[in-house]
Image (tube, rainbow, N blue to C red; front, side, top):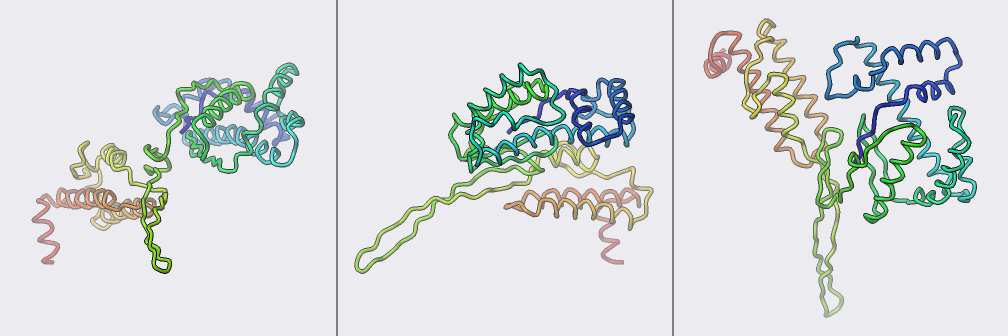
Length: 310
């Protein structure tokens, strides 16, 4: 469970784009633009507001950030593929890309580093998934192997991409007793013991097997927190009306609430337990009823009776 480090080194970002963009004037303009907004790394952090730049610039920053991270991932994938059929002594040539302009001394040091550690990329059970600023690295290996991966990530980011990463941002947790938040779900691995009775001639015996299931749960607390910020409910999850929508027509109010419910239902349809999702739907439906009742200056019960009788 990894938080991708930042800030990003702007000069390396320009060098990465230089291998794809042939327009020199554009690259010079981009370098000037990034240096003018020297604190743009803090602007793409979700916990901070981005009010000083326009919506188009936000997209530009996200595009540049994803381009930068994809180059880090390209190196990992390239090493993983090449390690399956090339000897370790040639691992130094894997680092040759047109945008690496480091000193030759550093390249020699890091070449020796990768010659000793490239065997880790041969792990057939290694899985890598990234979503925005978060990375999940899964493996069937031991805790010692994951500690090695943690060490490699920190060194790779620091030596080649000038990421200043704190090891505390990388968490090693067994999925059997730990749930992690990723892609809007709380995910973990459930162990289900199963006993099967087999009979051979006159003898019968039990076979105990242990099956593992990747379980995904709807994150109720984060969703309620999001609905609370959007003024659909209180912090404790009590539905409230949406005063800003009372100027809309009844059909538009119902359509907006229905669209939110459908989007949440579709996105979290992969959850193994739907009870939590029903609670979110209840909050939105009662908030919709309270909004309509407030618009017509009546209570929810009176409004619902009027609708049912009409």
